[in-house]
Image (cartoon, rainbow, N blue to C red):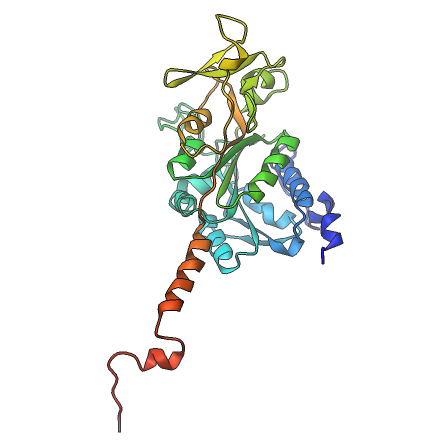
Length: 340
């Protein structure tokens, strides 16, 4: 029998009684709202949700959700979330993490949960800085960024989150901006419905230590011209008047205008998020302004077997062919001695 209460949930039903302690204006507030909106539309009972986090500003998230939650330790959210899902596959498990928590100390756990394709949803808040520990550069900070730990500018090459996910055999990768709650909620719903590890990178603003880091693509005045929202099965068009698009020029993507230089709308690429070959997805995830618009939306969504399903199937197969059916069978197997 269907749970009528579940089908009538509102975002308010997922708000806890805890005071939200993020800085005023922090992008985390918008992410929280988008997640609560998405969960209210999924039709899943509240007791089936579990939010797991590591350490960082974003990792306070479980306190603000009226669901099960676990505030873990630095970099270990992927390991904990994996254990939760494998122990109870019926749960909808959400990992909340940041660019430092996931990609620095937690980098090894992050790539392996993706490789194993455990059915969890990872929301990675990317503000390109360590916020909670007061402004050190992170693995996604742009080269040359001046911070407390790089007073003359960081000399390290930053990670591309999408490139890392696809390189780790990722089946689902999406990107959104904190301020676009509607787009974010739509992506979270699609991620929840995907079977396997889904990673959603959120371009999120830290108003204290890295304010405006995404303004070149996120500002209202420029975002239509500098971002492209991808939708499966639709042409890759962008711009205020949808007058620009992407096409293949040899082995590279190229920004073009249909109607100019012999380019027609038939030349514009159609987004296929379900294509197993990651080549185009890799290029889309790595697009950077000003040469390209930044890709938002679901970039890659491919079916694949999950770790927990394969594990359950393996256990069944081993049990079926095993001669050991009970504890006595195990204890009396092999060489045994009877002590008089």
